[in-house]
Length: 415
Image 1 (cartoon, rainbow, N blue to C red):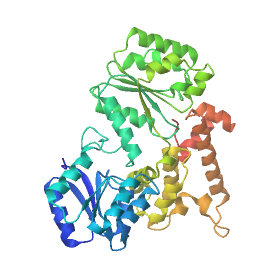
Image 2: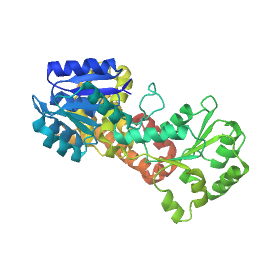
Image 3: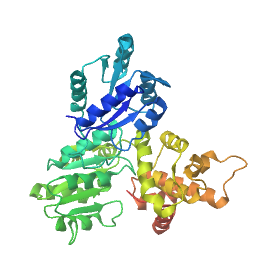
Image 4: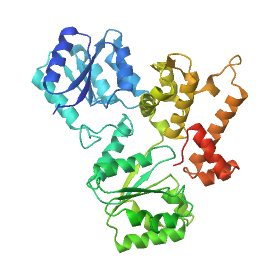
């Protein structure tokens, strides 16, 4: 039951902690043992991998288990907590259970009873992936885990899938993960992004179009809500005639509004959304925002800023509190700029958010201010148009090619 489970143990007592560590590792668990509340907060908020459970003593040298749980709960949903308490702390443990903790055991306890309670706790978790070797895709928060669970379920089916989410939420990554986990993974994965296609009908139905080359594979149609009425009708006809491949579509959060305005066929929506995967915006998943920044930092820093050693705690907190209107693409753009501008060994909040943190004696140059303003406007326009570059260019009153060049310069991309 505990094999390959990742468990955080927060216990300052050397004898108790060592005993638990030894037994958990014998059961096959991977254990991170921490002895202070201050270290546990950071390790649990931004873990190296998804945490299956936290075993926590109520009494800690620099605080309490209750303070640790409450601190984590203020910025997200903590992993399942199993508290260890003495007889005098039962009332506190019960209070924690009412606040959302999973369970508690009282000292002294029989090891078999402890393992049974822990086994029940992790056994009730919904795993985000079909195997332990599949890395997280969306993050490490409970919301991200739910998305991963839906992905795994969708991969086991052949029904059409509709992925909903704003710009920069990773809809294309979700579609690809479904395909890679499915029994069609050896077949083609074909993408048609209608936000970038001048002729959607040709991209889907023409020679060399999606339906022509997908075969038994997966056809992913992004920005499906932008599909014109004639193309919608033809897609319905294609589905009625039978489709040997797998259909995955994605859209923003405007589909119901377009149906109400008779701009999208409700019957087509029902056909496409046999399975639906909603992706909440990044600003509702602060721990995932920090996790994503860490993943991008590991990928981008060796090439763009090899001298920067890491990310400061203040920078992580600033990322956690930012709105991220452009989702992941906004975060990536800010990180690239921060890597280029940073002067110290650690990335600081002012590197990512110069427009917010610059004081009267630390003003941006006009060129830097112009770049910050342009990035914010472009991200807002892409978010409003669900990544459709042509429509975003109209909102910004510039040519499509000009917008594309600016996006390339700023490290942005369409939906």
